[in-house]
Image (cartoon, rainbow, N blue to C red; front, side):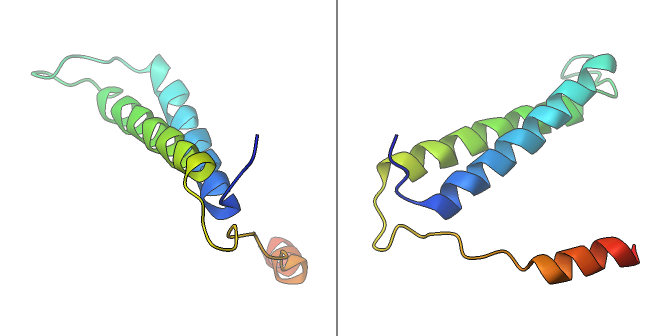
Length: 87
């Protein structure tokens, strides 16, 4: 598998992961229907839409070639670690 845009690929993975988490988390709530929505209707719908959007972004990152491959730069570990310590 050749990733042509790393930024888009990992953004798509993030969207897919968050969308699946919302959709799975909303399973325990009542769904209802379009006329009388239950408490799980909106989170499940948003989760499924985010998952579909993430899948589309991943597909595009594998098919559309960018000029430099849009590589991901180095992570700033020190600020992340300090933020984690201070919270």
